[in-house]
Length: 463
Image (cartoon, rainbow, N blue to C red):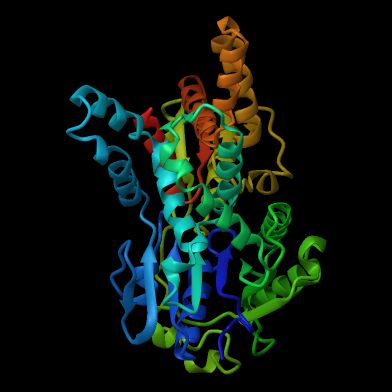
C-alpha cells in the first residue's frame, strides 16, 4: 500500500524548501510501482536531486530506476528544453531565409524568457497530452519550492489567456506561431490541473509554524487557480520515546504545538502523517519504508560522534564589515537556512553601525516573519514583489515608450506587456536596483532556492 491513499493519475508535490518534497514524491512513486502500477516521476525543480534519492542517473528523458522495474523518472532540464525549443522555432528557416534573418531569430530566442517557456512547454506536454504519458498509470511531479511552483502552475492560464486576447501574433518572444500551435495543449493543461478526478496537489510541510503558514498561503493561491483537490502531507512528525532527554522532549513539544495551531486555510484538508526517521532516505529500499507504522525501527541510526566545530558567524561578519559596503547573497538548496543566515548577517552588520538593506528575491518570501520582532533604525527590510514590480514596470513603459505612440501603437504595446515574460524582466530590474544599492551600504539578499536563483542570475547575463 502506498503512502497516499486512492491516488489520482496526476500527483503534484510542492511546499517550502527543505520540507521533504522530493523524498515524499520518490517514496510515493516507489511504493506505487511496488504495488504494480506503471509510474513516471518528473522533477520540475531546476536544482533537482532525484538522482541522489533514487541512486540512478537521470536525464531529461525517462530513465528506468535501479531496483524498481515499474518506475521511470526524468528531469525537465530548462537549458536542454530551451535548446530544443529554439531549434523547433528556428530550424525550419535555416537555408530558407537570409543568414541575417536567421541570426535575428536566434537572438530573439536567446533570453531567459525562452528558458521558462521551453520548460513550461515540456511540463504542459506531460500534463495536458495524455498520449505523451499513455504508457503510465500515474504521473508524479516533484516540483521546485513553492514560489517557483506557483509561477509554473499559473503559466498555463497566463499563456492561454494571453494568446486568446493577443491580436498581433507577437510577444516578447518574437512571433507567437510557436506558442499558438500549442494553445490547445495549454488549455488541456489548465483543465487537467483543475480536474479533481485526475489531479491531486499534495502540500508537503513539516510540523513547524513557518512551514505550515507557507502551506496555507500556497493552498489559498492554488485554490484561486482552480486547483481544489488538495491534501496535506506532514513530514517529520517527531515523538520522544522517553521523557529523559530534554532536547527530544522539547522537539516533541514544538511539533505538537505547531500542529495544534495549524492555520484555518488548511485545517480541513485530508492529512497524511509521516514520522521522522533516524536516517537519510536514499535508495529504493529506504523509500519503501516511508509512512509504514514500524518504519522507525527498521533504520539503524548512525553512531558517528558529532564533530566539535568552532561555530558562529562572528568572524565572517567581521571580515565583511571591513569594506563598509557591498552585496551579500545567501543561496543554496531549499530548507538549509538561507533566510535565517541572511537575517543574522543583516542584523549583525546593523548592530555594528552600518546601514543595511535586507531584501529577498524568493517568491515565497519568509523574511517578514523572521524579522518581525527586530527594530533597528539602520536596518531596512524589503521584498521584491513580482506583482508590484510588474505593475510599476508596465506603467513606466507606457509613460515613456508609449507616450509618443498613436492609439493603435499604445494598444499593441499594452498587449505585449500583458505577456507573462514581462514579470521576469520587471523582477530582474528590481534585483539589479538592489545590487546597485550596495555601493553606499550593505545589501543582504536572501535568494530563492538555488535553481531559481541561477535562472535569475542568468537573466542578468542574458539582458
